[in-house]
Length: 362
Ligand SMILES: NC(=O)c1ccc[n+]([C@@H]2O[C@H](COP(=O)([O-])OP(=O)(O)OC[C@H]3O[C@@H](n4cnc5c(N)ncnc54)[C@H](O)[C@@H]3O)[C@@H](O)[C@H]2O)c1
Ligand SMILES: [Zn+2]
Image (cartoon, rainbow, N blue to C red; front, side):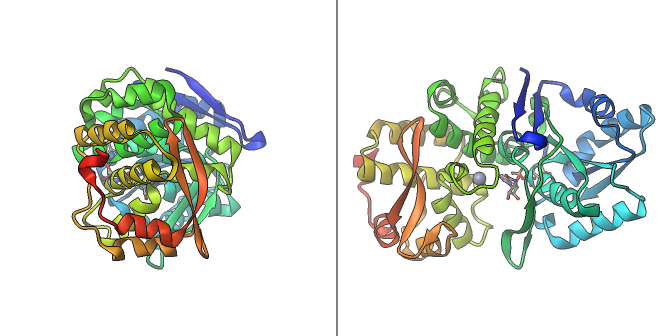
């Protein structure tokens, strides 16, 4: 395993990937960034498992370190917790040369990055991601924010971290549900990137197989995300490819009130639906749908909606990628060949609502 540089001019940074890396994070930060103070921001689950040794590492080096622990879960990614964190930093007299350590999943990473982007007009932060979602996706690329006004990520900023430290060992303690959830995104990367990543991911027999991988899968996902971030830092073009399966996935999540389906489960259903659509729209090979559907099942992810109801899909019209009559979606022509195309919204929704000959497709 190793390191990769995200090339973004004066905002460039390294992503370090190494089993056991968490034990050298403090030393690395001290050597490379010389912060006046450090706040480790984390959640209740991660703190119970990993906070004490990390905080002790900083203290041992003589650094001024404190920690801020939020309740675990998406409901913490809000303005009120952001405000509490900022107030805490003021109390702790954090200055412009202080540094925040986002230590947790995507919730912690997004909120911490946003706090770092606004505190004293912007201070440094690093990411120490601890979920599959965070290690392969959310910790890289600088998208930060909180949910607001009933909408996800309504307030936010693009603020790149100074470094990302990925230690795959910490994934061992992830509850099964969150492991599978993240693997939905890994399958998405496999379809996007194709090639060796596609072969390695489609060979997984179970979620735990992923934990025993030699690092190739995580590194390849990170490499792909890095490539898209470098091409499109502000998410106006190619980065939209990361939405593969998400247009339908978000519709499913939101229709069932964000309670019934997790994000990864929505994405899993969304991937199956978009592959099915691609068979009719752009002649995607049917065996690919078959292979991916079986894979998602082995990873304990859902592949079918319980009902095929027009109301599920109408929220797609409110989707931000939907300009008037047409909608831009990431469409797989083949593994490794996913394109952003504009399709007629009405036709797309009509196709999704129609009964598919599932047996025939599969
Ligand atoms: N910024 C981006 O580019 C981007 C990309 C994708 C997702 N996101 C955001 O990420 C969030 C989802 O992230 P997530 O899936 O990591 O969720 P999460 O941060 O809620 O973590 C999932 C659960 O796992 C627990 N956990 C984390 N690490 C653990 C570990 N090592 N061992 C045991 N338990 C652990 C957490 O406490 C939590 O209960 C969403 O808010 C989403 O909007 C952001
Ligand atoms: Zn996603």
